[in-house]
Amino acid sequence: MQIQDTPSLKAEARNLNFFYGENKALKNINMPVYDKKVTALIGPSGCGKSTYLRSFNRMHDLYPGNRYEGEIRFFPDNTNLLGADVDPIEVRMRIGMVFQKPNPFPKSIFENVAYGLRVRGENNKRTLDDKVEHALKGAAIWDEVKDRLSELASNLSGGQQQRLCIARALATDPELLLFDEPTSALDPIATGAIEELVHELKKRVTILIVTHNMQQAARVSDYTAYMFLGEMIEFGKTDEIFIKPKDKRTEDYITGRMG
Amino acid sequence: MNEKSHLSSQFDEDLNGLRSHVLQMGGLVETQISSAIEAYSKGEVSSVKHIVETDRKVNDLEIAIDDDCAHLIAKRQPAASDLRLVFGISKIVTDLERAGDEAKKIAKGVRRIYEAGQMPSQYGIGVRHIAEAALAMLRQALDAFARLDAETALKVIQADVDVDTEFKSIMRQLITHMMEDPRTITTSIDIIWIARAVERIGDHAKNVAEHVVFISEGRDIRHPPKESKA
Image (cartoon, rainbow over all chains, first blue to last red; front, side, top):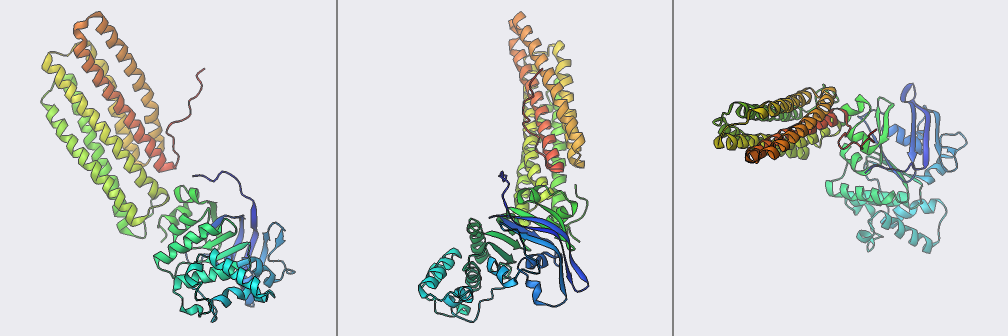
């Protein structure tokens, strides 16, 4: 089925360049991120898709020598996420991230999810209980952990840990979730659970997902962007990209003709 | 089509195998139709048996190609032009198989007419002419498939209009003939069936051409909205 309506913008990259020291990793990226839609970033290793993803929550600020040019506008307030006056900590409150390998804190299941809330200054036991439960339910893991919230998170299986990390990201009620290859370390069943979850989550949050698995991009996303050598080659509706891509380079990549 | 090779050479081999099987199947159907036309014009009832036998081979190929398509989808999850190719092939073989069935119908009609007596000569030429046009369409459609050439495919689609018009004219002549001389009704009806089968072959060739346009350009041009007639 075709997507009929034009959704509103959640974010938009405008003439975005990024440098690791001298090395230009992103070249003049322009791309919309639509509100409450899933946008998949695909492309071969080293194409810049993770670099691009990480620009959204200012992860690159952690290392010296990294430099942004251009802007990423975040709506509805039209803030430039890359602006010098914008506090990266504030940005990360609004934009959650889930990584390739599940990285729970060496704490209990409960404390993992409550962490972001405590950082924000939330200490009310009742509020924390409610929000942790809500986040765990949102990440479809509540039923599996509700009787063992005080156990160490590292005792969970890989797939459960990843859903716990999603719950942790959800706890602060982010507007945008960034997924960096969230299922590449998981088995097919756990992968299926995460994909199902992505489908549920997009009802209330915008999602940007980097994936190496093209079938996954085709399954979970509404929009797909193909990147190559730091450039945005093609952005479009997923339905169109996987049936009739406009650019020959996209075609070559998704049909497995890259050499 | 994409001239670059896949990372997996086995994938390339599978796709090339599929394409050559479709062309092989198309070749068999072409033979069926041209033999049926010959049988019709020259009264060669003996070739009917051969046409029916070829139809079995065509049916087997249809099943084998569809099976290969299913395996290829399951194993490779083709996308973009590869997906359109596999999807299109699965549809093309359906049309080829049906065109083969129509050739078989022509052959059986020819047998009935010649076993009952002689072919009324005045209809030989009209039906033969439209049959050759339909066969040419199918050849051209297969040629377009072999080269994934949308331009040639569009010519086939245009040609179908002529075949349809000529079929209607043959129908009118036969109806007049039957009214003038009711003794000819049995034979005339057989000829109508044959002309009808020929017209259907033209339709199947047109369908194949439409699938070729989809494969090569990603446009689905079936069932265009009716233009208002001036």
